Image (spheres, rainbow, N blue to C red):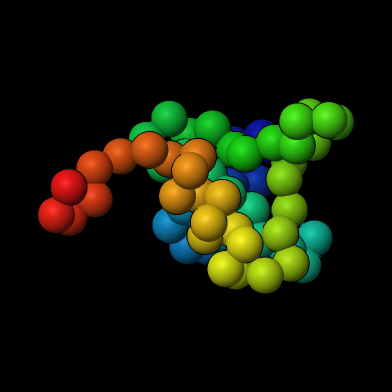
Length: 66
C-alpha cells in the first residue's frame, strides 16, 4: 500500500478500507500494516472485534494502568 492510499482508511490502529469493504490493522508507532503470514497481502477482517484483537497484539505499547 502506497503512502497516498493511507488517507482513505479512517480510524486509529483499526481502519475501515471502504474500497475492499473490510477492516485493516496498522501499527501506528511504526506505520507498518499487518499482513497475512501465508501470502504477505494486507490482512483483512470482516468484524471490528477481530481486527481490534489483532491490533492489540500487533501494536504492543503501554496502555493506561500498565
